[in-house]
Image 1 (spheres, rainbow, N blue to C red):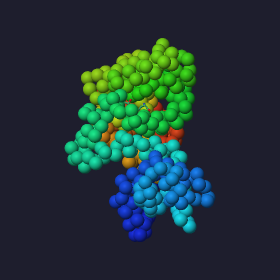
Image 2: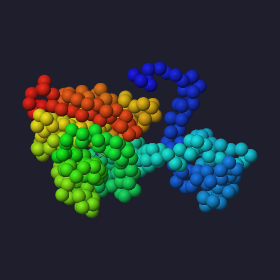
Image 3: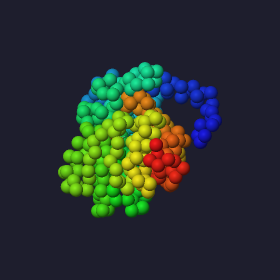
Length: 363
Ligand SMILES: C[S@@+](CC[C@H](N)C(=O)[O-])C[C@H]1O[C@@H](n2cnc3c(N)ncnc32)[C@H](O)[C@@H]1O
């Protein structure tokens, strides 16, 4: 497999990395506090001259001791360098401060995941999102999404939307090129896809299918934008296998949705998609697969995001290996008629139709 077939590190490099892992939570918290408390910013502002610890204390209004330990830790992490008692920002420090991807990942890990990850071992053994109790008392995070405290909700949506906001404008032309006019958006969330679709062409109607909490949030947004005649709502919990999907759509769109489910649940949802569509209908899936990434760090981000699903979201889903995911598509009675890679940062579009080899309705 790409990236993972060789152990390329020297023993020394391997031991260095092992220490980075052992102190991982310390490294994370120091970088975040140095970012949030303005330490990295005042160092950056000092430019090539650099800045002393006394000046940093004065500008950040933080205690001298606190600034000292954060700076010494930041030297070891590689966020800053020091020459003649003056600190300067490194390239890594720059990315912690300014890189949007790093920022959404860091905020998501801190606000949504950090405390819950402590319960990972229990989540693995019990196959339950044991860390979710740190946020609230729901069976899955999705049932609690609309009730999360505002700063946690902001980080969750910031993370989710970061990837779809980049992918949606790029994927619209692929989705709507076959004359699709009436589309179900399962996992429609805050209505971003529905809004983008309504603005893309004026003959498109979107039905947002989501849990009642999210469907209500989306409804408010759609009303504010005056798009109520272009967008309908179908609140439902699709974990309940008895819940069907509305019939009559030309296509079903699922973006970053099926990764919220186990393989068995994915097959069940896709079979219900097959029941709702006629034989010419399309299922369009936008997903990020870790094995399809161009860059090793992109694969790393997806592999680590899987652990959010394990410890917090639902205890049984993940960012999938495309081979595992595609097997679910086939098991549900669909075939892939088109596959578009490298959409946005990390996404693949899978355009599926009911397989002629499969009994009618895909069941
Ligand atoms: C990760 S978000 C994806 C949002 C959006 N499609 C995007 O690409 O940005 C997953 C969405 O699926 C919805 N969802 C999760 N579990 C669900 C369930 N059991 N039934 C219906 N919708 C569900 C969530 O409420 C959420 O809006």
